[in-house]
Image (cartoon, rainbow, N blue to C red; front, side, top):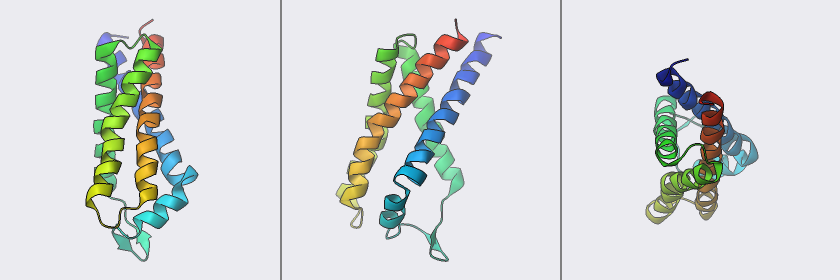
Amino acid sequence: MNQGLKFIWLWVITLVLVSLVDALWHLVIFGRVYREDFKALAILRNDRIVFRTVYGFLAQLVLVSCLVLLVILRDPARAKISVLVGALVGLLAITVYGLTNYALIKDWSPRLMILEVVWGPLLGAWGGLVVSLSYRWLFR
C-alpha cells in the first residue's frame, strides 16, 4: 500500500473510532443530561431536538483532521506524546467551546460546561492514542 493511501486509512480509522466514542458519550453515557439541558437551546420539531447532520459531520471532520495532522507533525510513533497532543487538541476545540458557550449563552447550563470541559481532553487523548496505534500498525 502506498504512503498516501496509508494516510487516508489513518484518517478514516481515526474518524470512525473518535466519532463512535463521541457518540457513545453524548448519546448513551450522558445522553439524558445533554437532551435535558440542550432542549432550552435547540431547534425542536415535535418536541425532539433537530440535529443538523451535515454541520455536525463537518465539525467532526475538522476536529479529526486537526488531531491527525498535529499528532503526525509531532511524533505519531510515540504514544505518550500522541496522547498529550490529542488531549491539547481536545482542550482547544471542545473545552474552549464549552467554556465560551457558558460565558456567552444565557441558557447554557453549568452541567453542559463541566461535561464539555472534561470531555475535550478525554476525547482528544483517545484520538491521539488511536492515531499513534494506527500509525504504527499502518507504517510498520
